[in-house]
Length: 274
Ligand SMILES: CC(C)(COP(=O)(O)OP(=O)(O)OC[C@H]1O[C@@H](n2cnc3c(N)ncnc32)[C@H](O[C@H]2O[C@H](COP(=O)(O)OP(=O)(O)OP(=O)(O)O)[C@@H](O)[C@H]2O)[C@@H]1O)[C@@H](O)C(=O)NCCC(=O)NCCS
Ligand SMILES: Nc1ncnc2[nH]cnc12
Image 1 (cartoon, rainbow, N blue to C red):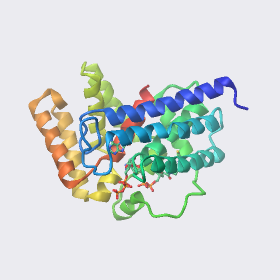
Image 2 (image 1 turned 120 degrees about the horizontal axis):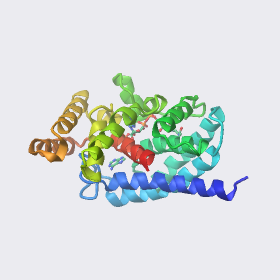
Image 3 (image 1 turned 135 degrees about the vertical axis):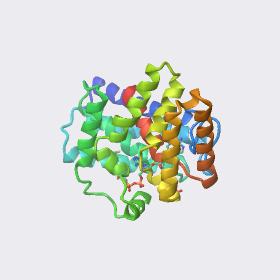
């Protein structure tokens, strides 16, 4: 039975997930991605579309939180949220007229929402990521037989995609994004700078299948190198850092490459620290 407390908790988790997606979309500037200033390397996305997509997903996250509330971490939980997540992908596509804005985010935030709802008292991001990893690791028995971009890329290159990232307990959030964010905050950088550094820390290390799908392995490596160099140059605080950011944005835009996987993981990071 759905008690008032249960319902209110689910509503607040869903609002946090939508807030994280909204803040990720609005964070400006971001290389190759849609932000409040431009559409990056995307011809089919805009900030309004990203925000509409985020809002449309609120019910999906709420349903995930409702079924997950105090639920044991088991096969049944995995299957219930997979069903809701797949419906969520359809909701997203209806809201965006068929544009894939947030598939990876539904996956990551759906799992993290589920983990938070299963253990309502748990606030430690590391524990929540670990629980989400355990949920993701149950076999998805009803996964439809369809070739996705991620699968094609993984067949071609030996990379860790969205699925493995979650099953491993989100190592790139744990070891790259969160430390970068906390480091920048400790240096009294602005919150915008701290979040951009967290994004670039992800871009420096994530095997983003969005980049590999549209580009080559050499593109992924170039983007990773430039992102790491931006961080090593102390980000926007130095002229060389600013130049590197500009070059990285140009590189993505000219080749129409988008670090969509890193953007999703940044949204997941923001959800965890909210
Ligand atoms: C297990 C699933 C993740 C499906 O896995 P699969 O390998 O089949 O993945 P994809 O279909 O490729 O989608 C995964 C999306 O995850 C993002 N991503 C990419 N790399 C990483 C990474 N290394 N770590 C984390 N996340 C990553 C990325 O999403 C963003 O990009 C989207 C645009 O994607 P792209 O395919 O490039 O673009 P399209 O427009 O479709 O194609 P083109 O125009 O380029 O031709 C954008 O939406 C961002 O969000 C990947 O796209 C999982 O999804 C699944 O099985 N779900 C089922 C339901 C379920 O179990 N849910 C449980 C919890 S709700
Ligand atoms: N800001 C953004 N721009 C493009 N693709 C994205 N996927 C998730 N966030 C995104």
